[in-house]
Image 1 (cartoon, rainbow, N blue to C red):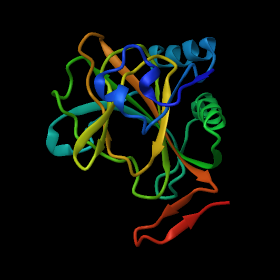
Image 2: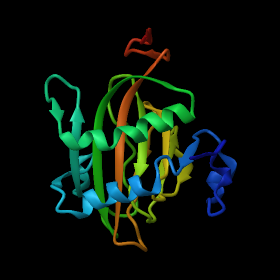
Image 3: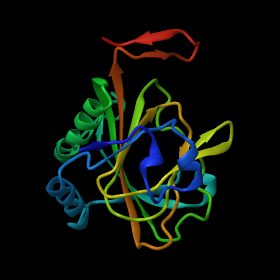
Length: 207
């Protein structure tokens, strides 16, 4: 497992990646065999569900699947969710974060040239959390990180790569142009000992 102190270590990084060290990514977060196995899961008649994009008015539908959801109003516990937990455990250990609890594991599939050139920025959940994004396959179509409406960082997909960001970080996907498809796994979770803020700005602390 290799950790980078910022995305500047990627020789293929775009200019925004070379100058921005806000988000740290990890390559080879799981073993090569494990990464191959996870990719195989999605190649083996995986039950994708077509759904509207983050903003329905975009008229862009993507394929998604929720493997785990702690929300009591819509709980989901797919047995396959456990295959993806080592990604979270390894990444948090690498970045010295302690896990309080996972909240949701969500998978997404975007096809080549799908959804136009600009996918809308979004956050995953309204409640305080952190977000991990894992790239299942080698492809193009970077994840864009926003600050104040401006793109401040782009992280290129690579099989076995992941990164962690605060849950209030606005970000967007983008479609691949040179590969047939792009698969990501997004894990939302709460960090133990981290001081979040609720909707009124009051600190929230989980131990």
